[in-house]
Image (cartoon, rainbow, N blue to C red):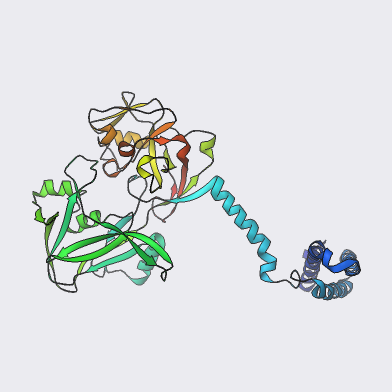
Length: 425
């Protein structure tokens, strides 16, 4: 034991700390190497350890120093891998316990989750973009700070030939806002990253310049449509909206329709340059739902492996729970009705019902909740909808979420360091 360390000189304090560390290592050597050392060496270590311990208690520093030297020499000869101390030997227990603790926390208590899409916008942000204009006029430190805060990645598509930029379009596979919507066609491709060690799936698009294809790839969960609508179509929220307002007629080119933007580029010009900003990263509470089922109006993270539409590609989704077993749901005039009454369980649902604040779109009738349809939630299941109803692939299209698929409730947004940082809604 060390008594009154604050009253000792610095050299004396260091001597006492070193002596106590030797006692600790002597104990480890005895515990882990007793069967190797034999009774004679074991007795010597015990004797030297007791002698050092008595010297520390007596407070005679010359004796502490002598006894420490004797015990150190004895341990250096017989300590094996335990003594002399190496970094790995000293810290392997701490690292092992820390790893077990981290695994336990992630498995049973709290786990991080990154929002993949904008189906819950504006409550949570999936991957978004920022158009880069020219050199953007930003200083180096401003760009660096922006990169640290948002961890964005820049993309630039350069024209190989000169001519008009055209965008191919095909009818959308599903249209939450009704029929008549379009998307830019793409294919999913595998790309090797990290010196070929990592295989990543990405979306591959092809824009046209004078009918010459120019390929660009984006993250798998990032559609290029919003970028193109902002860059070439005045920021319309969908191709359906842009075509309706502008009166533009699509041209036919083979199996696809083409929108001529009227923008001309020369070889070497940037067709489009933008930054992809990653989605919000959350901490998810994985334990409370085992004691209290999620309530109507709460945002919930769940697995899709028990949902038929995702049988071959299970994912993790975050949606808002709007229906529990027995609830009757329908959509009328942009309002979500539960058992015949507008659903206003919390502030966000009130805003969606009133189409106020950032929630101007309300709810779109589609799929199971198409105009004139009503759905009843069966036992053991939940009905989940995205806050961004016009751009959400949710229970309207793939059905109900089994109760056993619930993973947890989001707690806080901890990255990026934006205005949304903090408690989840």
